[in-house]
Length: 245
Image 1 (cartoon, one colour):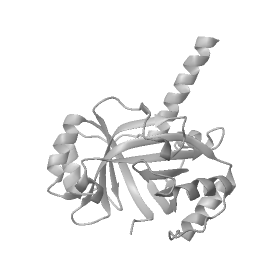
Image 2: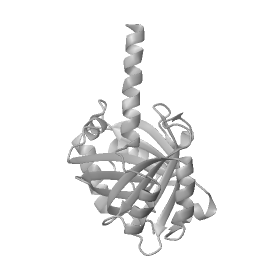
Image 3: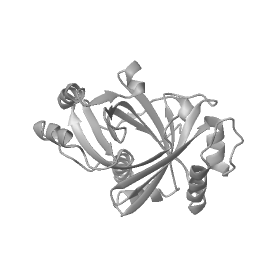
Image 4: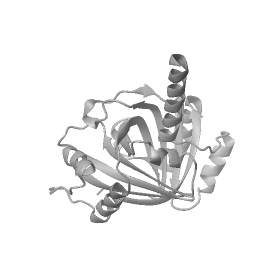
């Protein structure tokens, strides 16, 4: 059964392809590939982010408050309307990330997020998560605002599932055709050959991983996929206004 509740600390790193290849080889002594990656080198994750008409949640997030939250609809690969997807609510308090999600049929998910009517489904819904999402939806009206996808390679520690390491690349976004079933395409967010490395741990990062990062000059950074896209979007809008002013 897929994990539906996550509580962990996350650290992010931007690396180039050479560092990715080096780390991938070195990590094999300590971690094992995610089940998705055992069949394919990378797997695609597609998201639709929901926000208010005036982008309240992402505007709040990029100000780096002590508490922030996001709502998204996620699929693995391009789904059909009758495919299983996940509705996720992600919260961050100080440095602790709490992510909760529930599975749902895509057509039901669209209807639920628009009407707040809980579907009758053959899939077992997580009632606690449903209630948290309803609270979110009742707080401020939201709508689909951004498609964001990427290709991922993921690892779990050999010793504990509490340590997860992911590499995301080919991050792509669009602000039109905001339906998961409409296809996996969009504008590239990062330059060619760049990877977003994330370490997700219940407690501290293990010493062997700290040493590995130190040897390869991998340093933590602050990076949000949605936040980076939103800043880029604002910059492009400002340029357009100046052009036509």
